[in-house]
Length: 233
Image 1 (tube, rainbow, N blue to C red):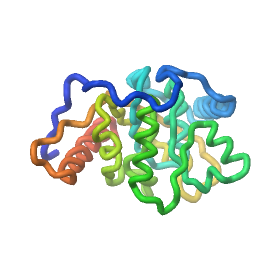
Image 2 (tube, rainbow, N blue to C red):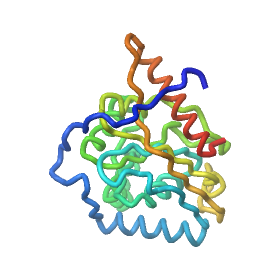
Image 3 (spheres, rainbow, N blue to C red):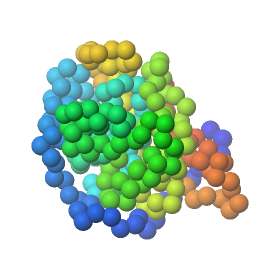
């Protein structure tokens, strides 16, 4: 990889104070969220024979951006459900307006993103969640892979973290979920799945005079390298 990036050895100072009165170590769940997590874990073990590796690498407190590969509809619940903290997610606004389903998703910490809305709105939503001290599951490819292989990494994750000092990201490989619930399928098929959580990392310092596009491109290259080290193809 060109322009290999050196990570900061020690994390910078803590991010902005939370905007809401709950604690960053608060692990309380709504009943809906508990039900979703319990059902996902049970289904994963019985139907998918899932293997969870190194989930202990996810920080136990404070904000963290969980950056996962994305080949299946099943990726968001399976990646988030095995983190031993309540995670937050992004969801299309239309889904959250569906009766019952929308209410259930909101209680599972889903945040609305309007179809056709600009990147700034999505980034603002993500930054707000992180400022409040929560883990946020995010898919840096921007959409599901059409062939099960790692797609181009977008720069949105770096735009979210840029300026949020002290907020790490954790790369995650969701391996073989493509064979569980891909585009056009309506019911998950039994497959052996492996979810691997990587080491926490921080965005590198921006070089003096470095343009934003060049900086975000370096960040993309680094994340892609970390995902491939985990086994992404």
